Length: 68
Image (tube, rainbow, N blue to C red; front, side, top):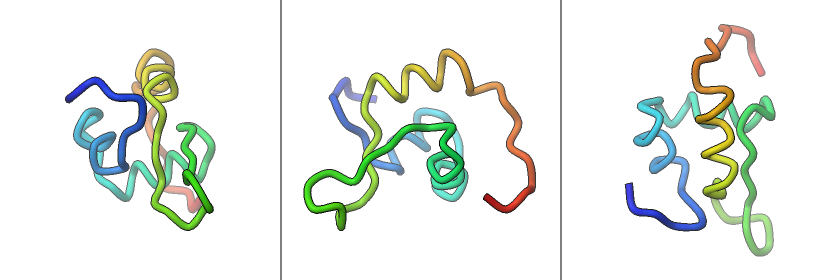
C-alpha cells in the first residue's frame, strides 16, 4: 500500500485483509479511529497514525457477532 496520510475504507480493508463491512464495524465501535474530512458528508478516512496504532495493538482482536 502506498504511504500516504489518509486512507479510504477500501484501502484499510485491503491492508488488514478485512471486508469493508468489518472496517465500518471497527470504526463504529471506536476500535479504529476515522474521520469524515471537510463538511462531514464525505466518506470515512483513516489517518496513517490511526491505522498503524490499530495494527500494532488491535489487529489480533477477534470481532464479536454483536451488533455495534
